[in-house]
Image (cartoon, rainbow, N blue to C red; front, side):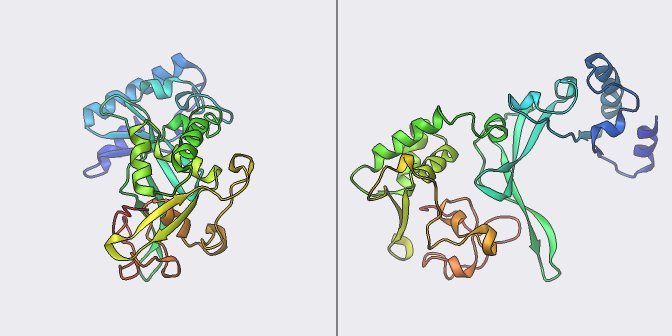
Length: 279
């Protein structure tokens, strides 16, 4: 077969990427389960014989539902694969992408990864910069972000409003307690934004910390989320100030550095220079 000959002609070939998977189908009906399984069996056998990994890329269907049913064509593509991962846009950060497990038969799939594309070096070449922090949101929630509006998000809002009622709380302690109570950090941050919780940096040096406080007036549940005036916008100048405050693992620009990070070097191209512990 053509793929086998191509592999044999490529020294030390260990990875075969089919992008998109429809490029490999020929006249096979992509929606016919039996035809797809019959087509995938030879490539799986070839991969085992030649000891190569095969990655097939597909697009997502529009609509909602479990992530495993969202790929184009037959479910047989996902069923035959040992591992299925979804790439989704982070709803809180347009420049960030989430790499999340949908199915995994060869390892645990509790958490995912995240990355963004950024320039590196004097030549401005673009690189994939992976975040060091694991991503706990599921592929189902990432691909259908409104699915928990009346469920876990509402519960997180009620929990956070109760925690901050009457007093400011350290952000680090609040996140730790939320995790202990079963609230995912992403859901907590969405609740924080929906409630218009104020974040204030207090102190200097090692004793500094971020404090969260509920708005002074009005009903935050009825208000629209807004960005604090002292935080720059992604769309306006590309700075990452808001992500610093939300502890997303970005170091940001000099204009939005706090006293805690003012003397640090800018972030390395493949991850943050430091874990922003108390944000």
